[in-house]
Image (cartoon, rainbow, N blue to C red; front, side, top):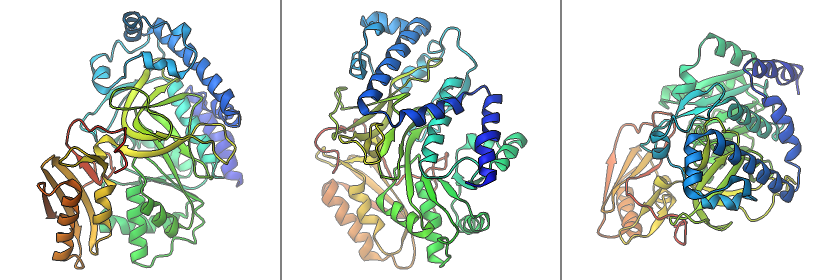
Length: 459
């Protein structure tokens, strides 16, 4: 660690957090100790925290006070996370309809946030300082797993309008002091890709952070132009906010000559899980309870896919209890070779809208269709849109190598998967825009009622 990184992580950033009223430094130190506890000790710790959290919100939050009374739920009797099954799931509609009643009586300062609405359902919610401190501490702990720290040179390839809109003088000064620089990922045009590659070469960052789709586009652009980015000393590339595909991981790792560390979380649900150098996505179990549920609302077993449901124990001022993330994942069965007792999220398969439905009702992951398109010569970018059970549109940005036989193969393979009666239309376009947040989605299904979570989830 350089002296400057040491000053940033040991003095400047802790001072910044203290001035904001956050206890993220103390939380990070506690998390770095508890990560080495046994799985049983962590489970006991989580159960105590859960019980205290539910008792607190049952007394101070009008929405949960009434809910507990109607359900006959006694938070003092909670002995473990399995007891959460007695409570209903929490979705965006419930939060929208009860925003004021979800605020705790006597709450501290709350900051208004909103999601980008990539699922078609933007959400306004609130965060207290405890939640912010946890999120900072959990991310900080995971960053240090990779022998990098706050103050090391960092390039962030991001597209959230919240982050970009907040780049005022104070924030720019802070980021400059901490050697973190932002590259906006809204428009991944050829000109911007060239500019991003040059910024990486000039900055020589120790770490990169961003969307897998954006970083893989930058990597592909550099490789196509024989630009060497493997000698810059980048130690790790952190990716989050989208599903990381195996080919993206391989490409990014090859071009930047370093490992790729996946992360799973969301602005509303929090920093849920982070990948360690041994390859496991560890859940931040000290503050976050993760369940997976099937379409019947019941728990799926470890090793079996289901919708990821989150209870965030640092959200007492505006609680998230059994919050439906809309993502499909698999809880792990085994512990990690790294020695941490933190539970493992074995797989995050994507959002429910990343799955498609065949004409006979079979549910499969969009990868079943992606494999055909991504390997075709001349395909530069694509998006698969399942408009209805009877119609799917494939939008393509293509080069000269794409020919009629490739188009015919898409139609043939898609019909084999979705059904011969399904209309498969290929549209060649000049560009395919990212979401307003800067994320990119390869598959979008508008078919309602996807039954993900039992025997057919892997396609």
